[in-house]
Amino acid sequence: MKLMMNEVLQKVSNAKTKKEKVMLLRQLNTQALRSLLIINFDESIISLMPEGDVPYTPNEAPVGTEHTVLEKEQRILYHFFKGGSNISRTKRESMFIGLLEGLHKGEAEVLCLAKDKKIGKRYKITKATVTEAFPQIVWGNRS
Image: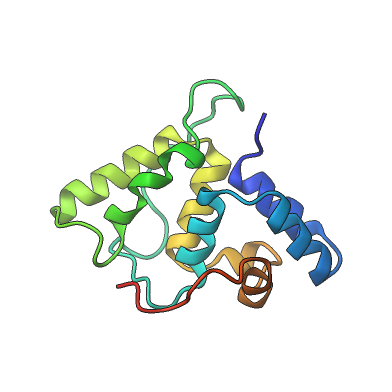
């Protein structure tokens, strides 16, 4: 079974050296992981969601049961950032809460951290490490 994004980030965070972190990011590379890291570290991406805690009910279902995963849901993330889609604020916030409630609580937490650009505060991962692991990422000019 594939690791969830919170598990990937924890594994990378636990690595002792930057070289190990880069190697793990490359080994565990997925579109969802790159999307989260871009959302978090690219200053040109502006969240349209209110900053801070989101009023949602965490999904307590065990891993592998009644929840969806960011790996599949990452395709709708563009709705929540400037330049993504033209939907009402109410609809956008409702969609975001629905997404969070469908995800495993660990992945929902990671998505909330990314929207507020705080992955680096919870996990020992830097933009420099991400840039070294994924040199194909072009930073900036996204909004």
